[in-house]
Image (spheres, rainbow, N blue to C red):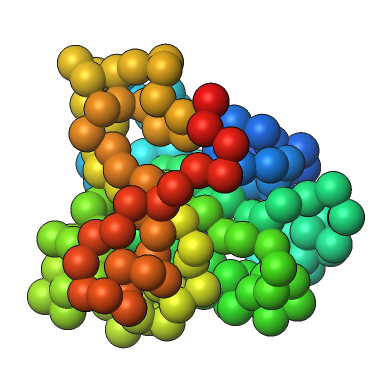
Length: 186
């Protein structure tokens, strides 16, 4: 089911002290809605755009307030699929506010879409009118669909060997995918 407009986005969970989805201790938002339907997905219930509860201005305020805690390193958005166009429209305000209020905290986003094929190019499958602005707020993108046959518990911050940790700002500056270098590799 396709949704229209930012006010129609749903989310299924917010974690306040997440250490699994990016470096440091993070506030994590799980959005609803995904068209990838990866075999072995760890939360297939999030494929449904209607799953969870509506993402509201109050939800956004809650996230911003939780990011203020001094022990929080940043915000992570995953799902579902944050780069479904309707979800991009739903989270752009939150990412803009987070980056403005906390410029020293980073933003990580997980996507089954690939940066250089689906997201960054204007004709990419996940590119819409807010994508370029959204990318300007993201520090690290973990891209690529989860592939069950390439599953590995040894990969930091990703589930399968095809997925990449991308330094978004550097990649946009140089015009090619640049790997993100972990501060404390496991």
